[in-house]
Amino acid sequence: FIRQSTKLIILHNFASVIMKETIKKALKYLISISLAAVLLWFSFREVEWADFVMQLENCRWGFIILSMAAGAFAFWLRGLRWRQLLLPIAPAISRITTFNGINIGNISNFVFPRIGEFVRCGVITRRSSATYDKVLGTVVLERGWELLVMLMMLALVVVGGFEKFGNFFIRQIWEPIASRLDISLWWVLLVLAVCGLGGIWVIWRFRATNRLCAKVWGIFTGLLQGFSSCLRMERKWLFFAYTLFIWMVYWLMAATTVWAAPFLDHLTVIDALFLSLVGGLGFAVPVPGGIGAFHFVISLALMGVYDVPMETGIVYATLSHTSQAVTQIIFGLASYAYEAVRK
Image (cartoon, rainbow, N blue to C red; front, top):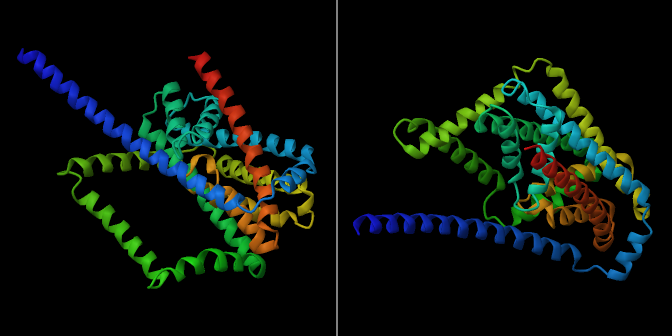
C-alpha cells in the first residue's frame, strides 16, 4: 500500500509539473497570437477590400515568382554559411543537413516565435556528435552577426539619406516612445544596460554556489565555445562572402517585390533596400512568422517616408510577407519530409 501510494504521489507531482509547463507555454502562445492579431487589425482596419483585391490583380506576378526563387536561394546560402561555423565542432556535417535545418527552423517559427533557432539545433545534433549547447552557440553567433550587419546597413542608409529616412525613425519610433515617458529615454537605456551588466556579474559570482547560476553559466560557456568556432574556421573569408551574397539576395527579394507593385514604380533600389531593412525590424517582434508586425512596420514606413496611404502600403506588405511565407512553408515541409525519411 505504501509503495503504491508513493507511486501515485510521484505521478501526481509529475503531472502537476507537466500541467504548469503546458499552461505557461499556452499563455505565451496566446499572448503572441493576440499581439499578431492586434497588429494585423491596426494594419488592415482602413483597407477597402475591393480596392485591395484589384491592386493585387494588377501586380506583376512574374516578379513575385522571382522573389520567391531568390528567397529559396537565400536559405541555401544561409545553410552554407552556418556550415562554416559548424565544421570545427561537427566536421562531418553535410550541406543538405544545414539547409534542412534552416528550412525546418523557418517553418517552426510559424508555430511559435523564435523556437526555430532551437529546433534547427536539434536537426544538427541528430546528424553529428556535436553537443546542443555548442551548436546553439553557432546559431547565436550567426544571428548576432546577421543583426549587426543589418543595423550597420540600416545606419548607412539612414545617415546617407537622413532627410528621407532619418525623420521616419525620429517621428514614428523615437518621439512616440519618449513622449510616453516622464524621464529621458537615454536614462532608461542606461538603467537597462547597468541592470544587464549587474545580472551577468551576479551569475559569474555565484556560479559555484547557486544551482541556477551554475546552469546559466554552463549554458553561457557552451555558447562561448560555439562563438570561438568562428575563429577556428579554415576559410574565414567564406563566412563573410556568404554574408555578402545573402544580403545581395535579400536586396533582390525586396527589389523584385517593389517592381511587382505598379503603385510603387517611383521607388528606387535604395528604397527597396530600406524597406528590406525595416521589414527585418518587423520580424524581431515576438509573433509567429512576423505576422502582423511586418505588415504594420512596412505600411507605416511607406506612409511615413513615401506618403503612400496605409491601405495601399498594406498591399505591398502582404505581397512581400505572403510570398516569402509560402516559400518557407514549402521548403520547410520538404526538408522535414526529407529528414524524416532519411532517419
